[in-house]
Image 1: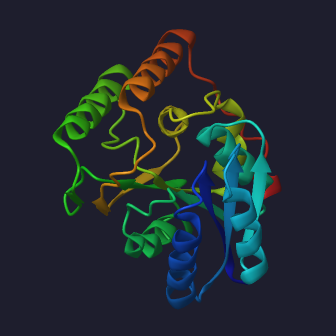
Image 2: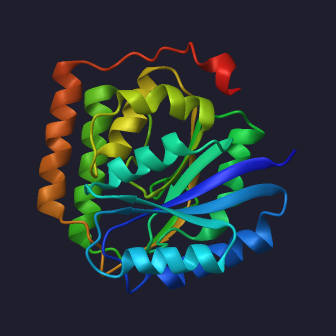
Length: 249
């Protein structure tokens, strides 16, 4: 039986790019993932433009495309909902701007299914990666943030924020109930919890191109990230109960 993979695209008011991004991803998966059974899930978290109708049209156009609608906003909330609802063997996600080159997908999936890693994550700071078009301010902020996490939690992970990740179903079932953040800190919290609970994480070098229309607001996001880090550092890290292992293997 083919390995099943769900690719989630979290979106908020992305009417201008959603259709093109979904089509590009669908074409890539159709041409390169014939050994997998895959779906694309559009996770709309509170859009007020035409994002939802576009998602519905895409689901009608492509059999392998579905959507979920959340009234409350939050990228982390959307990912958690889509992943917890999934019955796929592997759950992945990527940002709708497709900043990360899709050619990294096979290696990401191979790391989980053949090499038995629990998570595979894109890394823009690993040897072999390339980053183009990123403003110096964002580059410095990102490197400082990752350095701070490594100092606070002693993790070896180089890039906590890249919007390109995959997780095994077992790891998702065990880790996601512990993640409290519903916004942009979701990625970092998930990786910190995974590492501290002994899960195997593979960082994959990626080719990444900055999106000048990024919805990330550096100041607000940085403040939210800092609050999240303080919560984990001084409030304690949750411990995973692995009682579900036999149920989801």
